[in-house]
Image (cartoon, rainbow, N blue to C red; front, top):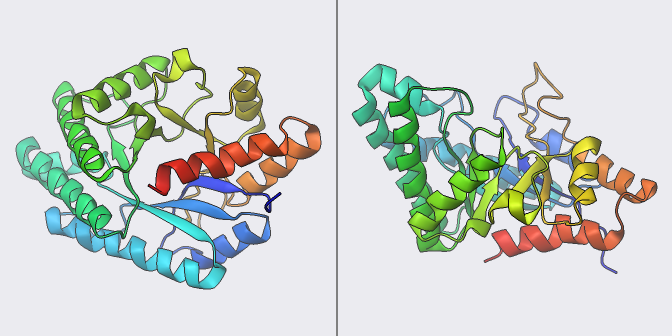
Length: 278
């Protein structure tokens, strides 16, 4: 059998963080591949659409350096972080803010067309209560992102509220209205909603805790991915989870009998490959 795959589906790198050194730690712990997701970097203050493209360049540069240093497969996702809409609306009004976010989405689409990114994300809507007009605007921006993903046959990685399975129903409905297969909608920071009646076709990407893994596998399916949402903040070295969490949890899954190698290959190889190697 091929070497054991270990895939973290949501990692951030920061120019002012440990960046390449963190990914060296990930590889040393057993990591073999990952999804690198863009962040709103303090180095680029977003004031207009072109600022997003400049911000994405930081992500591409970090990915290049990490590949050179580690030799790992690094799949890049770029897109306008949804919570930015709120600050932009306060500064410029909601209509202008929505236009700026849409430009950021188009820039992400261009990056995908050029082969510099293989997914659009993280996009979506605020993960907390917000005014109805912000919510509606966020959904319009999200739908456009899904339309661009459909045009390019790539996934979207979603940042949004996570409380109930109705979130997945909503995401699935928006995807279908955009012509996008809900299976290309990756729910970042998903609870262990993995059964067919809970996902509505959406692909769960769960924080790699023992509790989540056990509950997900207890439902008789291995249709999910694991993630840390490592944010590469030197002031918070383990936020949201340590960069070595997924390799350590994969080892635990096998050692404890929680999962066999076939299940690990499905979660850490087959599913990521089907999404990002399109």
